[in-house]
Image 1 (cartoon, rainbow, N blue to C red):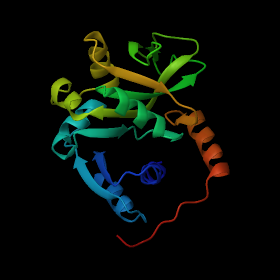
Image 2: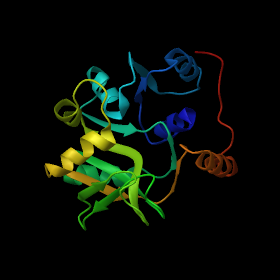
Image 3: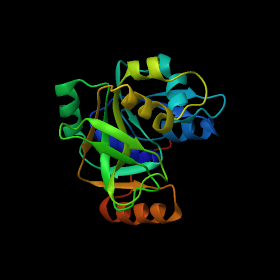
Image 4: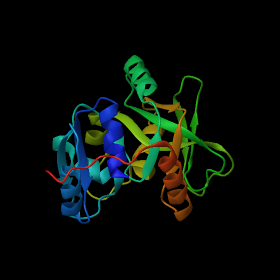
Length: 209
């Protein structure tokens, strides 16, 4: 999964990646440095589990003024160019990639207006039926982490994003075409493996660091 994300980022034109690590960080570091990649890797290693928001706060000294945040448990195959174009045009605090799901109970639902502005977040279990959900890709300004993520364990999805919506901050959500897989369940993991095995050849690795 991590190898796929790294290769996708490289193809999208990125050159620097900060990996937020915790459990068995040394194993992941060794694996990443063994990949055949032109990317430059930096590693932010948490002393304790900090959640999706807390990990960004811990990595703050390594972050650029603008960054693409990618969840490590989501696989996707989509073109990032429309997100970059929308974000550059409106300069919001954050532009979130959205994908359609027939049942949003497991994900939480995101409501957007005609201008792509995010109007509401519904937490997991509070929504049902079809709707837009986060695809685990966020193009955001560094100031989001500086001003809205305190030190310690913090969830970006449960704690930070709803607060930004309540404050009527400039948050955009863009539905994108392409495949998105949440591999947090055995079913989702099998589905992702089958789809990517059909569409993508085995990536190339080298034993050299």
